[in-house]
Image 1: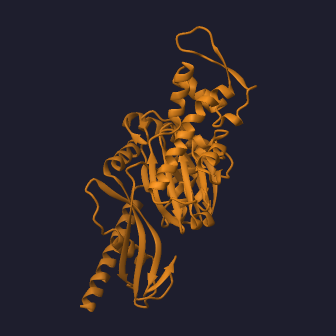
Image 2: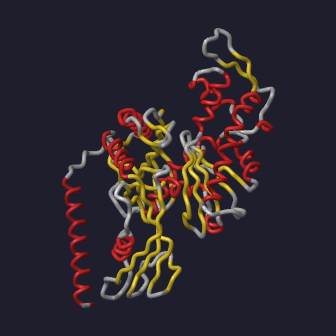
Image 3: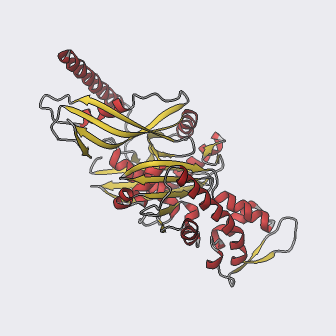
Length: 422
C-alpha cells in the first residue's frame, strides 16, 4: 500500500449494511467514516432482493460520505456463507529473474499456478491464502521476497464460493454505483482484528454471531483450517421474543437490543419495561429476567450447534486457545458467560479498538480494511475529495495498458525460460 491511503469496506449483513472508511498511514489504521443502513434484501447472508440491497448499500455509502465529505468509488467486500469451501493446493514455478532474486512477479506466478485445480463448474475461486513458501526445498518461508532461489513453491488454501452468490454481490455493488476493489473471506478479515498471532498458532475457534447466520472458523498453526456456517443467528432470537410476548418483530428487536440478556443468572429482576402486544390495548409488564428465559434457550442451542460443527471438522479434544466471539449477538450481556458454560472452554468477546466502532458488529468491516491494507498491491486512492477536480478516465486506461504490457512481458519471459529449459 501507499504510505497514506484511504480504504473502504462494505459489510453486507442480514440485518445491517455497514460501510467503513479507514485511513491507512504507514501500517496504522484510523477509522474516519462509518455508514449503517437497515438491510431488507438479505436472508441468512444471501441476497434475495437486489433492489432492496442496492438501496441499503447506497444509504450506508451516503452516510459514510457525508461524515468525512468524500466520494466513495471502490470498496472491499466481505463474503461468507455455507457455500464457502477450502481446498488445499500447491504451486511450483521457476524464478524468472536473471540474478534469481524472488520478486513480486514470481509470487504472482506461483499463486496463479496454485489456482490451477479442478473445481465444480458452479464454484469460483475467491482467494488464495498462502500457508508457506518453499525455496529449493527449504520450507517454512513466510515471505520469500528478496531471497535467492531457482525453484519457488507455495502451499496454500484455495477459497471457493458459489458463482451465483458472488455474481449477485457484484451486481448489487455495481448497481449502487461502486466498483469492487477486492473480495475477501469475512472470517479471514475478522481474524485480523479478533485474534492474536499466538491464538492462531495454538488453535482457536472464531465465532461470528450475525443476525441471519453464525460462522464457525477454526485457525490452527497460523492459518484457517476449517469453516462452517450455521443458518441460525440473532433473528431467531428476535422471532422467539416476538412469539413469546405476542409482539411485533420490530418491538421484539428493540427489546432484544435494549434489555436482552443471554444468561438467566446474569439478568436483573429489577430491570422492568412495558411491551406493546399485538391485538391488545394494554401493555405487558415484563422484566429482564423474563426476557432472559426466552433468549437463553436459543443462544444455548446455537452453542450446541457450534460445538457439533467443531467436532465434525475433526476437533474432538480441547481447543487450546478456546473460543472468540464476535458479531452483533456477541455484544448481548451474558452471551460470553453462557458460551463458557456450554462449550466448557475459555471464551471472550472481540471487537475493534477504534473510536466509533467499538462494537463486535463492526469487527468484520474494520477487519476488511486491515486485511486489505496488508494484501493489496499499491493502487490509486479509492476515495476522492468532493472539492477536488474530477479525474478523467484516461489515466485508468493507461494503467490498464501498462498492466497488460507487464503481463505480456511476463508471459514472454516464461516462454523464453521454457525454450531454454527444453
